[in-house]
Image 1 (cartoon, rainbow, N blue to C red):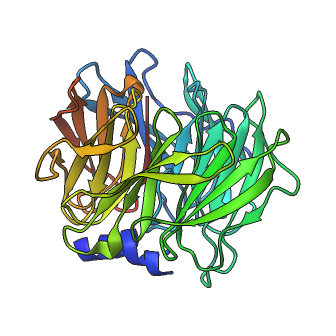
Image 2: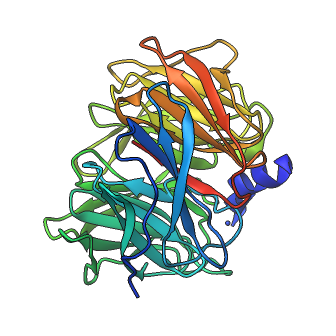
Image 3: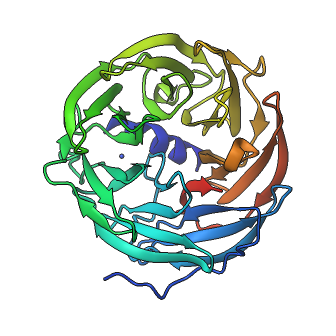
Length: 373
């Protein structure tokens, strides 16, 4: 099964009505929560876990997205995401080619809108204020992968932005993630099959004004996250070769250009696919699907990277870790494990060290994506 998940993480690389009555059972008094989706083929549901002050999780119900998933791996990062103010949860429905918006209310999580994604098989979604963009990975032939934009209304409604759909570098790119930079002026998209990174500069109307394509410093760019000072950190799975993964840091220019800061710093682990950065901008972590581990890096002020541990192992996860998410203020790091269908938790201290918290088991095998408060 591990080799299958590495294939999902990598060799997919080579190609990969609105209801307001459905509500979660989340405890509004809990310090936080963690969310994942079932990606079910008959009903895609959000699974909710209340987070205690010590980082432990307690199941707190589920709510339908109104769409359905694929029942398998998506080779993606950010299949679901929270708006910065924590008011809305946005999720992809890769099987029904839709995206959904759920409200984070005092009585729980509630579905408020669902719309066509503007393409086929949406896999990643990102927001900045009232602007939303989704990454569509394309159909069986992977000849129609694109990005499409939407405006998020005050009531949670999604309105497509006319003429916002843009192609990637070519067809059959096996895209992994879409994400806004900190001020919402530039979108970044990684392509696993082509080892390319796209940047899209946006105008005041939310439409793309310029599209640039760059060769990734390392092979198989996958997940990424932004740090401080216009820094971009990208994981490189390097086709799943044993102990050959790496992370590159870039400076993202105002015009969408990329300058390399630290080129392909080794994780010393296998199949580094997902990447997150702490809110402070001091540390970055990858999950290594082939090594059942997470690798931490210290981020210098200028964006240079240095391993936290000499062997590249900051923490051991469950079997085949994929998605990751930090709780608010980066107090806790949560990892979704594909083969164990579990969530591993870690407490994060001021020096970037990870201490295991717990494992939450009994998730569906198709679970995908993580978001946390």
